[in-house]
Image (cartoon, rainbow, N blue to C red; front, side, top):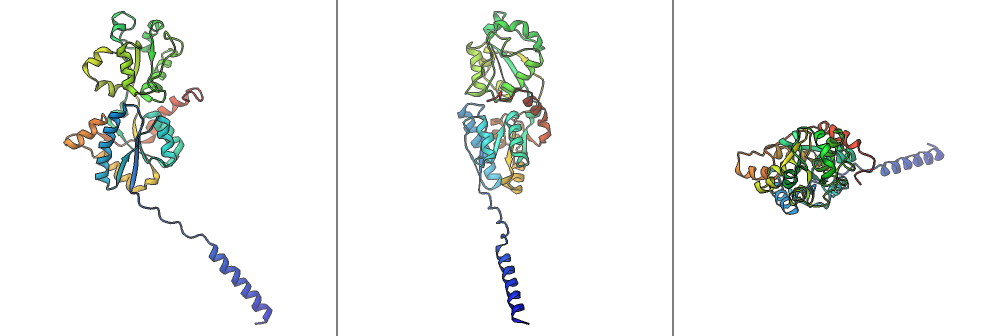
Length: 307
């Protein structure tokens, strides 16, 4: 080999060796998950939510074999942002926030389970007992029949981001030809804190004449509370709450978490305590497509209406 040829060959080999050295190394394997950060939309009073969340976290920690820790969220939007921004891993959402999370996280939002009642959810419209006694409002079979009474009636939704306290009752009111901002004595109010408990107490106390709230919460209320705010209308059924986990937890953790939720058995005393805390007879499997109806209702709202 001539000197010039040798130099060219060595130069070529040198370039090749550099190219190999600069190839990216194989991706490092994902670290095993040791903590699952759990949260829930704050639609019940904080004390109750902390207690029920701890019970389900303790149960999942035992069944899955890693720590599940509850982290309270300040508002509904924080639960959506938290899952997407890697601050939360598993969240109990309402229908509205579930759809927002599915749309924001795309395929990384994994729907694990919902309660049996969530596939046939409903909202109660309840009225102050004195307002009923005065004839301001009365029980009806159709919301359209309420319209003539509403000019002398005050009304409150729940939180603006609540599915059962705002999104769906607003939807049914509008379908019945009732404008929540124009057809009541004053524009519809919202409960900025306290969840469904706040709505119920506002009606009982007479702060407002009429309110819309979660049927599960109302059904578990004390008899004297129900007497102070009787049901005047029950909406058609729709889907609502569900558990959503993020794909970063990994297939194994997500599978074990789903299995643990689905195997909770009300016939077992310890399991029943967990289920009762969530107002569930059992948790069941569900499909994201079942929330498409909520998405359509949400998309029908004016842009930025929920902000």
